[in-house]
Image 1 (cartoon, rainbow, N blue to C red):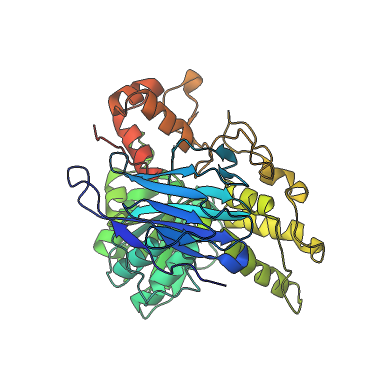
Image 2 (image 1 turned 45 degrees about the vertical axis):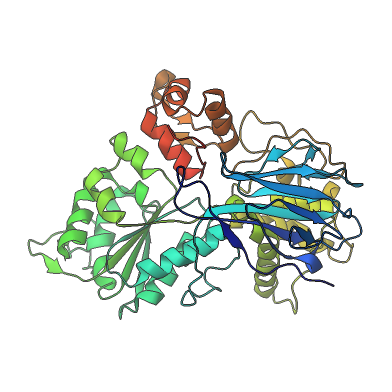
Length: 475
């Protein structure tokens, strides 16, 4: 079986827009035997069963037409357009039928052509995958993961604090462990979840206390800073740290000194701090809910751990990887083999995955008992997998018919964010697709879009960065 080209190439865009190159590619993720990468650049490229190089790439599958799809680079939008070339079995993007009129491809768009499922990726480069980062600790081939491994390699040996930003379940703790391993610090990695303890206990846990320092303190405790001396202190859910403790944490980071409860003597400690959060700390700073000076200090290294919906290339392999863990936890000799039909694979890869890797664990648990039934169709997929997450978007129709009217999924569900609203309640932020639609409606004018959402212009800019939306003609 012919293999697909193994590497990507970068495509330079107009210098007046960006100076950095783009890495653009189409990764076939199903069926399993065809997994591989097709490089895309500024030259038009045809994908088909018998597409010939240099302007064609072959995907040898019986359901793929001889010339099935055409990709063209749009230098103004800085992304590729795709159209169907009158194929026999049709094409779709996120379940929406693709015709002969070109459609703009966004990063992590899921395409199905015939019975082949692929993911389009685009990212500014160049990217170098560092060999020093353990691929078992930070696994995956998605461009976003390659960029994360590169960032981990750069930050690991520096003693400055690191701020890991990512959704719950995206793998921030794994990244913290790898940062600690690569730092070669002699001490241990010590972890505290700031959301797991009451505000009254966090200070004692962090800085320690003397016996009798407060009611119930029947013995002294060294605290996590001293326990991590010479090593790394990982503070998960840092956004939950009470405001009154934040100056004390800032002092400990800046001066290397702590003051245990019940004492008047500062103690020296050497603990590198890695913090993690799934919240928008910049918005919390603007809302007065997090100290600006502490945020600035923590974010000397600012590493984004991408949500699973921003690394769709790896989802099916994550199912295989976590199925092995699932089987080992149950003492099984081998992991369950979870085979999916093309429609089911497209549904799984295109899902929003708001629970990230925890959602994959859930899917494996629900499908493992069906091993031996052959390729599982879309109909037997759990209902929660078929539902859209963001409010106001219609549920996807069947991907098998390639005729649904679902809205393209974005990388994250709507989440509550600070902002003025009736009764002073938190307002949901728009989904990625909703924000893109608003930007288009307002001519990509950030001020007009900010007025549309009744938000500050800086908040629109933060959303654009968070969702990795490229503004074609910058305002």
